[in-house]
Length: 66
Image (cartoon, rainbow, N blue to C red):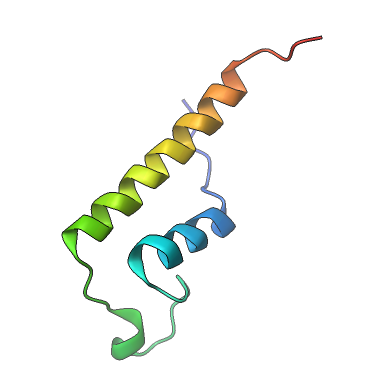
């Protein structure tokens, strides 16, 4: 099974919505690159990422209807 990279836009959106992060880019500053995250926010972000992957996999596995 080949691993595909995750869409950057989706990851950025999940980081903003669930973790309160402005960006996932490295900014070379400890105060900007490290963040305290509540476990429930992390759980929510992981669940959203799982659901997005599940939907993408399901869509790819479903043959197009003619």
